[in-house]
Image 1 (cartoon, rainbow, N blue to C red):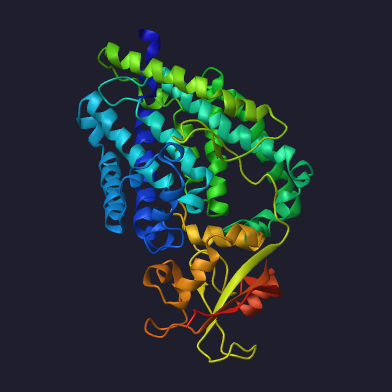
Image 2 (cartoon, rainbow, N blue to C red; image 1 turned 45 degrees about the vertical axis):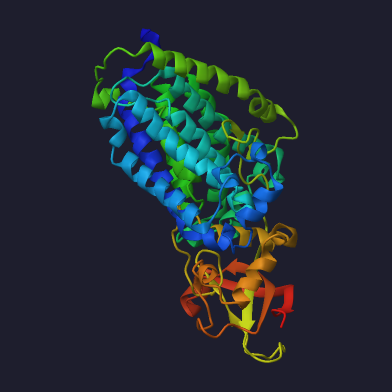
Length: 470
């Protein structure tokens, strides 16, 4: 079937596959390095505790059958090795069926992690990686031309990512309709990047242009993905530029990078790279691809209905395999940045004038002079959840108490998630407390005078002085 393939998109597929493999690599690396403190046997939300309460059918995962920290580590590092192999192009050197199995492997490995990751893995970028990763299984390798059906399914995912985000904004916070949300967003976003301070201080008229351009990119441009070339290429290119702008403005894990590599599949590079000639597509491959496409389109009913609903939800999976999901971001924008600051003291009594020392996180604001770093696409899961804790204590209820217990115990794995602990490894604090502060960017003058990029004001206590039971 000649209509089944699109040989002009061979380079688009190649760039997509290598980019997706790199994102998988980062995802598995983050899991391997952070899991012990978060979901390990002695973690804040242990996997064994979770699988006792949630049945396999609700969260399919190999860890329902066996769990140990050593087994999880081997599972995550296996994902790193497979991803590295795909990044190096191993899939291009094996038969088509073997390449499909190779791409299925990281999807299955990561699905098992996400489905027991609980609140630490509840972000939209997890489902996006799994949905896109599943489609990558059927995109083929150098043995066959890219199937047009899968390429259009990729565009369908990209459409839902962008259009869903645009609709949730227009239906949500009125500042998006007034074009004023970016007066606040760069300062109050979950994890600022090294350029976020400068983005915040751009002139307000420019912020209004940013917001208007965002609406055009998310509500108008996605429709053009389904038009003939070169219009579809222009639309995808505009989305890529917008995502790169977002990458510069903050740390959003691999959400933006996955959207970039997804958009690449709609770009026709043939005028510059030419068209390659491929062998005839095997019949079994055509049958498998068409059957999977029909199945995914049937599953798309609920996400499509969600887009049209006045009660639209964002970042939700309609099935435990995360095959077809709904997306969206920043339907509401915080006007204030409230940060939970954790402090400890070794003094015998937790008095107000005790020697309270502050814990420093890698990504979230703390030290007023510590300039934000670029971490994305690498995820700092604890830092992200600390931002939610500042919004409401309810977000932190399941894990904040266990975090405090581990800090009181100087737990090595937990301390590795931090930039700096104020206490030596052999001298844990006697008490821990948490206080809520409002953080604001300094002005240009304040930055030059003090060298600090932040200033803060005490709001209230978040957790009174607490110690381990004797």
